[in-house]
Image (tube, rainbow, N blue to C red; front, side, top):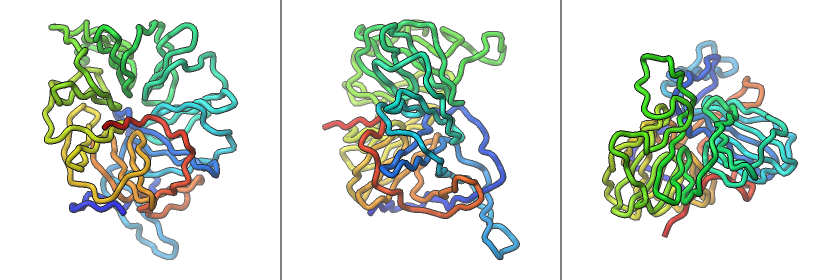
Length: 328
């Protein structure tokens, strides 16, 4: 059983509103052994409405996170990142930051290696990005020899960091202070005072752990990296936008790359996904794009008409569940 000593969970509800898009990259989905798929948007909404049959006035819920059921006649997952997966029949699916699920069919690329929001194409070694809107984008760039695959970044064998923005930036936009490429990829060599990332020991989705124990986050919007951030305990288990420290405390990393410390976790986790973790009983912690944990969600039906509050997610997950990093 997962328990927090603080109350951050919110009752989430179905609403006619659509979540506002933001610069997030932590959306993901879960596929179960019975073929059901549930999408976990990175965004929350300012206000959702719970409509109860026979009750005229809906209940308003602030700052809500959601869990969407998706119809799924598709075969099993063969390889998965954070916001995309390739299926055993060679087709591709993606999910955007608002939780919309897309079937892409067979595309002219297949992964040789994967990160959270990108993969390296087999044969050509081209870097293919899946952006926050669920589109796959050919960058036209050839990947170097990669030492560490993160979620929205990678580090090559010579210690050079390349980060991946949530979407491309228009180079004519005068409101954006661009450093390096105006497109999806930003290479650390393009920064003033080039930083060497040879001392990175472990990686998560939007953060990395250096040998000295400091955490460097990656900003989803602009691809910039943060200054090293010190934490009270080294990571024991690492997900996409969170980690559990050796002190058994939950730490999260926001879309800005900022580390946030929460409370100790009571209960042993069994599954560590990109933005969620689940224990053997199905109790979960979901971390939204702002780095805020939730232990209750509203499960919205495939039709969008029905919803129910849940504090458990089925544990009959498919074996392959995407981006997970375990450390000693």
